[in-house]
Image 1 (tube, rainbow, N blue to C red):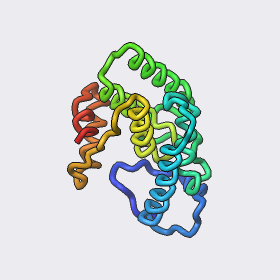
Image 2: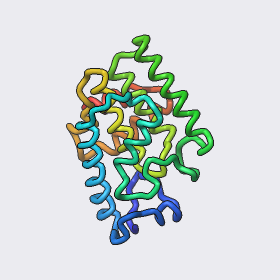
Image 3: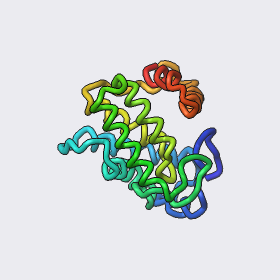
Image 4: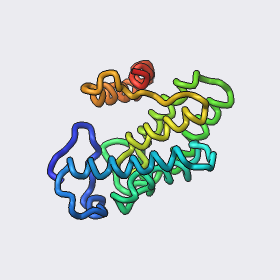
Length: 190
């Protein structure tokens, strides 16, 4: 792949070697392929009969696997290489366990309003960065599923101004990194 997207997590050579469709030659072709794979996963998510909670590592891994199983051999597997963000690889399972426990607590004790709980869940999941790639897309999809499970409509994720959405999203995540959740809350509902 020759093109690089602003803010995208770079793939290591061994991760790129795990690309399933070997005929893809450009980042645009890969993006289109991945989007079709994600659309299949979204349909599965809407049709599934099981009401397994989003708040389990097995569910998070299964959603990622279904989002990228026609694209990457490592779909649904935690990353094994360091990245420009995220916790060290050895801390991924425990960090996810801690985060999921926190979110269960927030829900059970009405610590935050539903939208704030979902935004904080999203931010923590992205911050952990458990997979080699697709973490933001995965976190948005499972956050929307969490909202559905909590009886609320999914977020709009900046759809009111799609032209600047990615930069606004990254800015909001960086603000949340500093403890300011307001920008992320505003973004997810815009």
